[in-house]
Image (cartoon, rainbow, N blue to C red; front, side, top):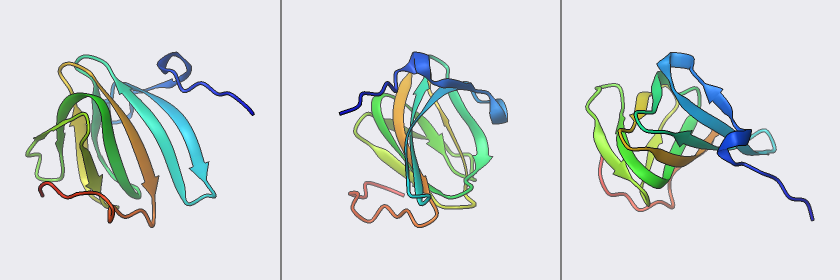
Length: 118
């Protein structure tokens, strides 16, 4: 048995694309996917950028707003997820704080998630 920490204080600060959040890598799945946890404090942001691969953001705590290329923001909260496909422009931001698990991978598909909107 081995123990690991993915606590915010062990993550790294991300500022690319005018971002302001902490990222902790959780796992890499045989070069096929990367799993991370992202900590956004009050007024945190994952800046507007193009998805390099398919990705799903699972909000596990807090709430915020997400958009795609049309820059029309939609609210997201704990217990909800959003999927962006490769090449899709997107952004995530929060006024009050948000913690999310993100899975990224070329062949990643959200086929088991319950769809609640576009």
